[in-house]
Length: 113
Length: 113
View (cartoon, chains in turn green, purple):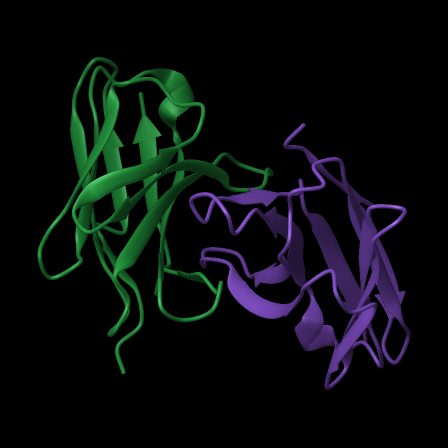
């Protein structure tokens, strides 16, 4: 069984640019959630995707957007990057028919200069 | 209120000792309370979780104690080992909505050899 994978591992962008982060969910999981973890803080919920639709959103502006594909993998897109977007971006997968457990990937470290 | 408050921010314990981390929540709609362990450069890993219909859950050296009336829950690590040195996050979720985890701010645990 393959766990949650994310790419790229690290990314450096400049302010105003756009970025796309990718996540492959764990085998058998149909729900993907994205979280932002600033240095020294707990993860904060960005949004969740189920059946290729956004199914819940945290307190993040519209320049944070996402997609889920038929194979349940997902993308997080961030437009007009700001310095405060520098963080570890975590993807978590879960199954609607299973328990509540969410399994996290290793994250993508984004640095905005 | 969606906050989950976690204490202490950091904890130093001798090998073989007991580590105790506490969390408190406000939202009575929360019905699932996991604990995650995170090592530097890694994503959070699910450690143990509890639902409010039980007051305690034990898995190996890890125990969650839950006090529904006080809206508090805690993680106890018995016989703490240097390999337990990591950051621990409590979290809470309302299963009725999107499976959005609300995390505490984290506790950095150091177990001295």
